[in-house]
Each structure stands twice: as structure tokens, then as C-alpha cells.
Length: 85
Image 1 (cartoon, rainbow, N blue to C red):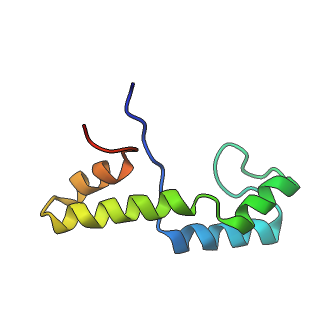
Image 2: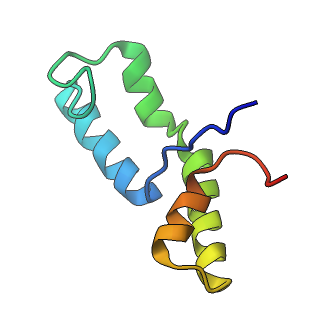
Image 3: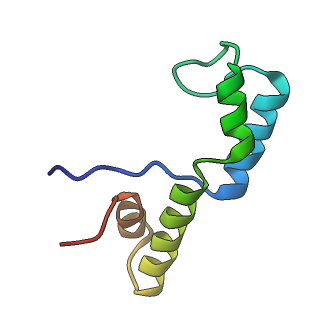
């Protein structure tokens, strides 16, 4: 199984971004930028469904820094999904 990569951001930054997108009712990032949000997408932004991945990534990042890793190494570790084998 190939390693997958987690795309995470600091939770309050995602929340701020989601709030502005929800208010404007338009995608402000990514491939759909400028297109209108569907009701489902607006609901996702209200529910912060990405929150768990953000918290996991931030936890792994801080743990790696505490172990003496560099910021670049910590970033790489924080983006991996699953446990090390």
C-alpha cells in the first residue's frame, strides 16, 4: 500500500477560511475557485469535517519538534497518514 499524504492546516486558519467562504457562498481556494458553494459544501464548512485531520497533523508536527526534528522533517512526518511500520 502506497503512503498517502495528509493535507492539514492549523484549525483556526481553516475555520476562518470556511467562515469567509460560507459568508460569500463562493469557493475561494482550489479547483472550484469562483464557483458557487452547494448547500452540501456550505454545510461541510459549518461542520468542520476536516477538523480531525487538522488536529492529527498538528499533533504529529509538535511531537516531532519536541523529539528534536527540524521543521522540514516535522512537516513531512505530520503529513503522513497512519502509523509508521
